[in-house]
Length: 81
Image 1: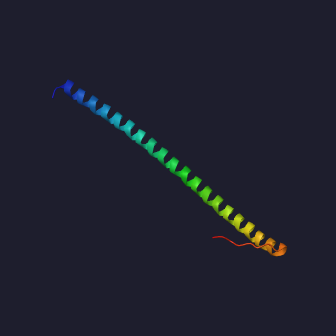
Image 2: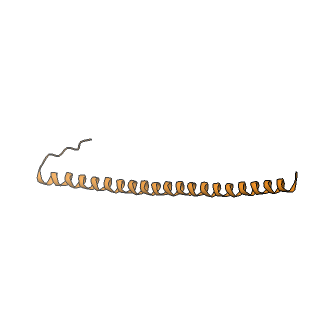
């Protein structure tokens, strides 16, 4: 191997190393975006679950109030479900 060949090899390896650094950086960025999206979706799910529980309790309270009110005013009330 002559000196020019060695220089070409060194240049090619250097270029390959830089391309790999760029590829890994891009891969890390994409993975970070995936984690960010998953975290956001988990937060939305938690919020929806909390809202669902709150609404369920509110409906239960309304149902209890309706049952008590119907007894006082003498209206028949049957719970469906």
